[in-house]
Length: 640
Image 1: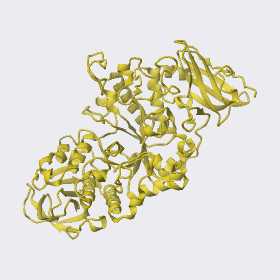
Image 2 (image 1 turned 30 degrees about the vertical axis):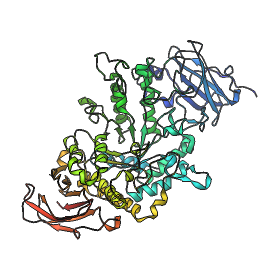
Image 3 (image 1 turned 180 degrees about the vertical axis):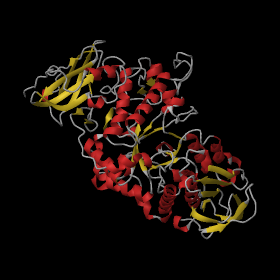
Image 4 (image 1 turned 45 degrees about the horizontal axis):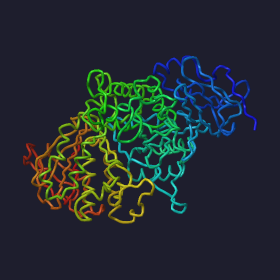
């Protein structure tokens, strides 16, 4: 076949200004400039290719059109920018390609996939595919209202999803659903359960399915396992039109060592640190980005903005932030290099995260960033101008560990561990928290959420309903991993569908109905969300009744003065005539009871509400005399 010759007419896409701000670390739209872009030059349709490889002596684009031979379509380096480019006529949408990189060092030669590829071959293929991101969106109403739907004062209830295993097609060998197939089914289920958002485990392109997407090779492309970029855009568009926000797990902390990917890209450690004490991750066997390199920061922040701007996503949950912040993360003495001040803080990563958050909130208003950060690093979700990292929210990992530890205990021993549910009161407003029970808690032999609960079968279901009630009563946004919304018995497996057949049983439907009603309350009652990140919205009534393993606290609304009393009984004993102090007289409506028969509970309750007695208790002028159900929680509302 004839091989089209490249020519260099002066870049049709990349300007000198682009190169300047890229090299200084301030170009955040690289996805519009580098990679492969279909265009027309001098009347000829073809593709413009550009790749950063400053230590290469020769770069060529290879594909089926030139029999993957590196001698036919060489790229030309642009001055001293390190960017190689060429326009190749006749190469059109759908063509697979790689960059052949020959280094100036160590006789290194490798065929590399495009770091800024728009689309890639389905694994195990590793080539990029010439494609575009053209799509006609219909989610204007959502985008315009997004800032009012996801801020500190509004309810955010997040359903965490792994697209490849949420629901499969058993009639077709158990294949995963495509983006277009899953959109209406997932939207219907999310609406049924009352969640406001979904959070996707990384759908950035990744070669190994078993990494769940956390070993990313394509930082700008949705995985082609489920369809094209336009199919993914349809998925986003569909959910937005049904009022559902979408957060993406995004992984700027590390990348895999696969030879076709970013590692040792031009015969040098270009994207990663050369010294393994800084550049190699001992836990995940992957490389760590060099955040001190200007072009790497441009690359990563461009990836973030691509997902939020081009793909209309509503937020990014940044994975493994703790591993970025600490130079000695998961390392023994002698295995890490202190910073210039002798400390263990990764100053380059800190500056990168602050810059990332600043650019996200500046360039894509209304979106949110969320940190998965598991240490006591201060001010993760505080603005950069006061010294914070600038995230909108932070996962409350401490709450998750304490809560799961408590609910795995036999109720007879819970009195000795009462503080596991009260300790959060010491720090609950130091950050803007998301209460998360994520995929990490239901894999690798940890068992499912339902199976973690103590007791016999009935008690396990009751404990899980109680846990969710406690979660929704506490300040903070909510996140629950798929399968936990109906009480799956077995732990999650990434290559199998969820056990949807369990929904035929009243016990499991009871879990779903409990969550649906809690989500309904969370969305409709300002007292449960309006002051999620404000200490004015929370007040303990009794945090010290360890002997009875009961807890009582108030949530408050600023807008209408409503107050919601949450009372929990963490034992299987019915507590009749239990007195709880309240700040107001009058009628306290029973909004929610996790022990309702509709949820597969025993039905112990208070007949719709209680009139407050003029009898002081718990240092409050009034009190309620209530019946507390076994392993149950009740929400009472006093209208402002």
